[in-house]
Length: 129
Image 1 (spheres, one colour):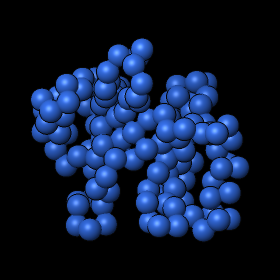
Image 2 (cartoon, one colour):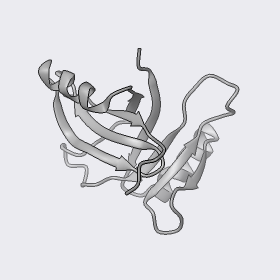
Image 3 (tube, helix red, strand yellow):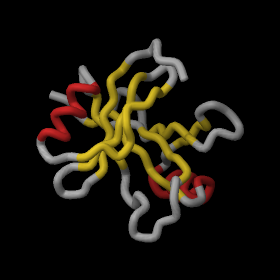
């Protein structure tokens, strides 16, 4: 049974969000890809405690009612294409088609029947850009 394995926080101002979550929850942030990449890995606590880690990224569109204004939880799945097909067969929609995440796997964002956005990922460390 797939369980959430990652979450993402969208931010208009990533540096401001990093300062907020660092001060509020003690999370640590590491720029992924170096320097100019607009993606930071979030460590929420020690690996030997329950919980998941996540990522922070610059919001892709202004928050005007249509932009993402929530954490996106992503679940590991054994077969991304099958999962996407099952979602659409049951009334879900594809918001971000299958895309590579280098060194991690294949990712897609879906929307459920209630309008909620979530991610599914098939792990495959051999994936390249």
